[in-house]
Length: 434
Image (cartoon, rainbow, N blue to C red; front, side):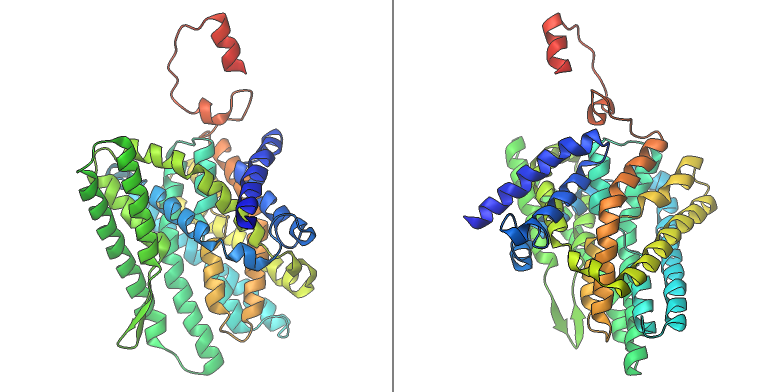
């Protein structure tokens, strides 16, 4: 009963807050995150309203995993062959260069902080945080794009870059974490630095390919829209569960990236299924409540106690500033190199700022280091800032590029859709205005 009440409060509170967010011209995802923080164990939850303990939030992690699976599957549907022919080279180049540039700048900034104040942060932690900085959260970006029905070259490239960013981030983190471990232990493990991360990416892509092929094959035996929707949902859920598998083979740890697996499944499915677009519209409708819960729970997970630690705030400020500079300059330079248009070059870096799930997963692994707790708290602080500010910045960038319109009495979601005109009577006009 308590769990159902908490989920009900999370969804209802999130929806109510969107009314205020709309008046402030903020994306709905920001409203969900704010409600999550308010209902979390470090705010109203401490008074018995909402989630009373962090453990209660963690017990609902299954919802977050499901939502991430559908988010990744949806982004994978953006990798259609006709788009890849036009933007594939640009997306790969920008995705790699902006991530590497971000890691380099954060490494330099935090290493300088280490040499200036060795007691504040270790060199191994500085290197690890640099790699974590490369990761971009696809969830918040996708939600802003969906809410406002953003459409245009910047939006298309953004979704491709965000997807590629996950694979690049995994490689950078594995290499940096291996170097950090070597600095502390004095031994370099080629297996953990090279073999395991490459296997994770390759096996994730293979598992996703298999899932996409199976989904397309099964869908052919059903013609009802509702049955096809049920099949798609069950396939994505099974793919999410399969991506959680971990085991060892000949001393090598085998694991999968949930985001990469589901993205690849979506990519394969959309390119071989001739009715994938209509099916995705039904999936989007079904997943809307799931996404609301995902972002409210993400807000509830944010630990506000870290704001009382001045060292975390200092390192976090350096991290956020250097990461933001790295994302913007990396995107600007790589877009200039690949001859993207002026709007993409100017605004893409702003849309790459959100950071959440992937970085938190990396921080959890980094807790094995001596200053692992510092890394986790810094990442939590940055996620708190980026998740609350990032969606609004993404909306601003897409509006400035002319790919979404400002909200008025008729919201952007309608305004960006193709409009079919009919003859309307006086009563019909009144209903539309309402």
